[in-house]
Amino acid sequence: MNTHDHDPSPQSSTKQEKALHRRLAALARAGLEVSHDRGIYRVRLADEPAAPPAEVLLPEGFPVEGKALRQLADLAAVRHPAGGVVRHACASPDFHPGDAGVAIGSVVDTEGMVIPAAVGADINCGMRLHVVDLSVDRLLAHKEALIDRLRGDFFFGTRDLPFTAATMRAMFREGALGWLDEVRKAPLGTLAGADIGAIEAELERVHLGGALDGDPRWAPEDITPADGIVRDGGIATIGGGNHFVELQVVEEVVDRKLAYRWGVREGQVAFMIHSGSRGVGKHVGAVWRDRARASWPQGHKYPDGELFPLSRAHDPRAVDEYLEAEATAANYGFVNRLLLAELLRLRLRELLGELAAPLVYDLPHNITLPSPGRADAWITRKGACPAELEQPVIIPGSMGASSYLLVGRGSDRLMRSASHGAGRARSRFSMGRRGASRDEDALGLTGVDCITLRAERRIEEAPAAYKPIGPVVECQVEAGVATVVARMRPLMTFKA
Image (tube, rainbow, N blue to C red; front, top):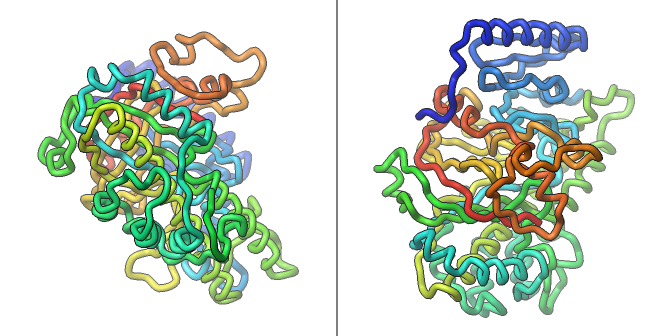
């Protein structure tokens, strides 16, 4: 696969090497031990020699961001005085600084402890991909009517999704499976027109079946009443930042055999959803950020970056309760993406008649999951998705660049993980600040169809804010992390 051009100039390579040496020297002065070998950077805090060196897979020529390396080194050095350590930490090629002290793209293997801050508040943010038995020309013939309906659903709250209190509790307890069991009894509002049997059949293509062991007690009280009807303003919403719903066209199929098995073919319309657990995740994340800090043993130095772990040896109940609370929010995230997809699918059918729009896969990229074959050990991914052997992997580009469907290779290089996107090159603040460029060509916005209520969102999320997706995908293919199945081009993107 040729996703980007290489610069063969020896002079250019020499300049890059000199710049890299200068950057590594500056990082050493800042207290980081950093080395580089064939696309892999290794970093550790100089004053924490017992910590495992964290590894980052980066395309050659990509910038080495000191703040992100510091955050990853801090994460790798976390340990609990009562017991609990990081066994390994690494980062995927969309690696960049995180606002909450954890670098985006981080993957951490812990033993005897969990780190709530390593997931943060956007619990079970993830990707969902459908393909549609529809040509682009036929879709675009109904474009304005479709946009009008979806703008109402996604931005103005015209969606009609009431649930019984029992349905909400079942969702938090058992995820998509529990939610469906209750909805099947009496589908209300928009879901009265949905094919519940088809939705249930698709759960086998949702990571972990979309069902974790949660408990409604960890959810916000206003959406977990004892009885009655619940109208939750957060469910089936996209969210801010880089979250989106995007209609695409399958532009290229690379692995025809696997694409055929997954129902993907060239020329199809596709739609991709990037969203998470919304206010529920924020609620759970905030509660456990404070609880983890409050449970830190008195008299011990705070961990670097204030990344407070919860130790099995110190407080086993807190570990179990945090994992249950995170699962509760994750269950909401699975159903949130399912409903965003179902709204789009129903709107397409309203306009175009009965058509197939099957799910390809749904997977999380902000979540803590058990480490296979080990007791009291967990893999936490922050902006990195699972890439197990033969598992579909979804890596979106910006709204002006291609997105990719890949298949995981179960590689230990990134702890069986892959990137969740291209990664930001410029912060939202820098994109929106006074004096920043508003030139459409310079921002990469020429020809981009972005539907949003906020003009600044279009600028903040412009293609120029992101690194090129091609090198990010190619370096993972070369590293044996995943291989490409198909490439999709954006047609229109909804940003809240």
